[in-house]
Image 1: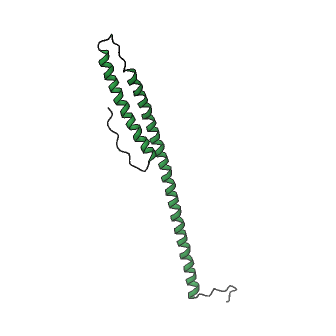
Image 2: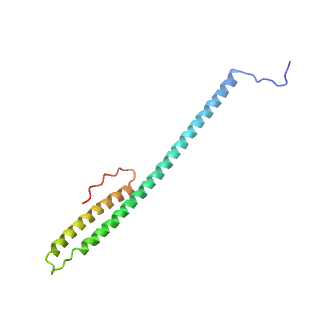
Image 3: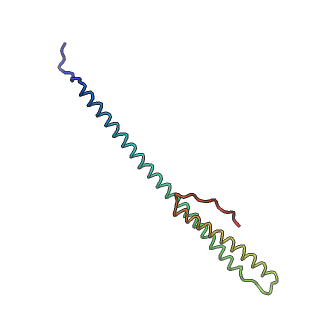
Length: 130
């Protein structure tokens, strides 16, 4: 029985050429996957960095509002009623307390602004509130 189809000649050269082509194709695929993984990792890191910066900006804004609030409270308690004998001591106490709280929130605001501007750096722990 003879068939109309002819089998290709198998020689060492044709086998070697096909092996080289497969290796080159596999190498190209591995390179493409590596490049894709690096691009994907860079994209994920960028998105996470932007989300962290946004979170830090929100924290800084919260502390800015608190700082303004306590500065306003300090200025409103810096005046005392001269006819009331205990009001001067009370006013100084509250002015001092509100001043300390405003200073704390100012330090926290600066800390979170620094963290928002440099999201790759570690953020130190918060100091205890006054």
